[in-house]
Length: 340
Image (cartoon, rainbow, N blue to C red; front, side):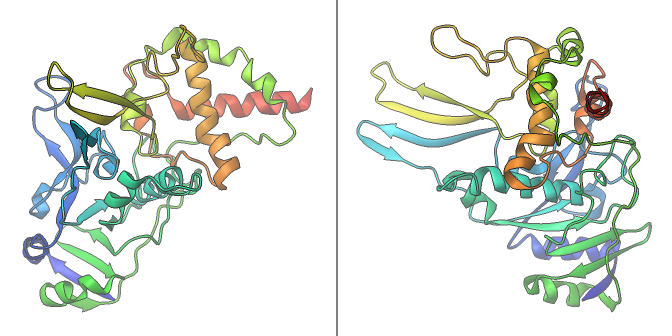
């Protein structure tokens, strides 16, 4: 079912929807960027059309609504253990197809990666509804078409934001009454981006000696350039690594809690183990691990690449390291290996 709304009607719909849902979308936080005179584009609560930032790509993905930056898993009080409750109201996330596909990848990691589902992820994930933002052009660093993440059917509502009006396709019956009240019935079906702005060629690993890829000099370039800040990990919608923190609130350590906190394969200490052992000591090794996980290992396990081509890692790197360029370099190296 398709609907047309004015911006005023859309604002009223948001207000009505907010009684049951928490609407969140890309917003612009003024003067909240890396420097005092820069803004930060990130996901936050929206109450009107004016709150949505659609002209710029968000620096951060909406994954923190199902996989928080810091989450208390349980608290101890003596011999008693308490698992904190999560907010009861479900969340309506306004997101582009690449980010919705990113959640699909997170689902594989937390819900389909073995016999047990991740309890903490699952209880948040079931409370998520997607309002897909139609994306026909993308941004300069996007390569979602190459990663087959430019299209999705996993949404309750699809939206096209025009200059004066909003078009909507409503698939979820729960929202039909809202759109019937505030919108006008029309014919509308969302369209999807069909070509990439950033040209990326995925490597074909079939028949390739992976040990030769592992030891290739390419990765030494990133040992020299990468500063292990982890910005690519925190901005990525599909990075899902975490660490654990145990915190005590009293000297006797009877009051304590365990937290799950974001971590990343690029960050110092991530692979450190007891006895001083570390699997990936230099930054080039970490870049290799991330690259192969995003475009090879995950696909071998789940049948699709982990990377969705949002391009955020290219956008946020302070050393101007381009992940898309790394993929292209690796693709050329693979071709050379096959010609030998």
